[in-house]
Length: 145
Image (tube, rainbow, N blue to C red):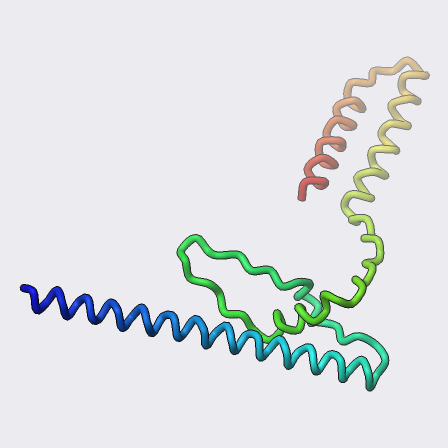
């Protein structure tokens, strides 16, 4: 019985040592990749006069620990994004309005105009008021999406 316990404790100690070594090796590799990315970015800027931009979907290096404890692999695009941090951020052009929202707003304006005309003429307005309510509801839903 004591043999099994002592063997387990030795195994556990070896596993912990291996874990520490692997952690240090991964941290060293990550730093090396970052340093290489910085060197490449500086060389690119010196040769071509503009900062090296990261791949489009990568905007920043963000690490979040997962709930299970396993971390996702850090790749080269993330290291390149770290290099971009010192450079001034590129301004994004203003977003174009959504076609669906623009169409709904146009329909709403038309329906409100018809409602005012119906009120001035003295005709029933319930159908138009319901239509305006539905369009406004669609606009609210489109705004959440």
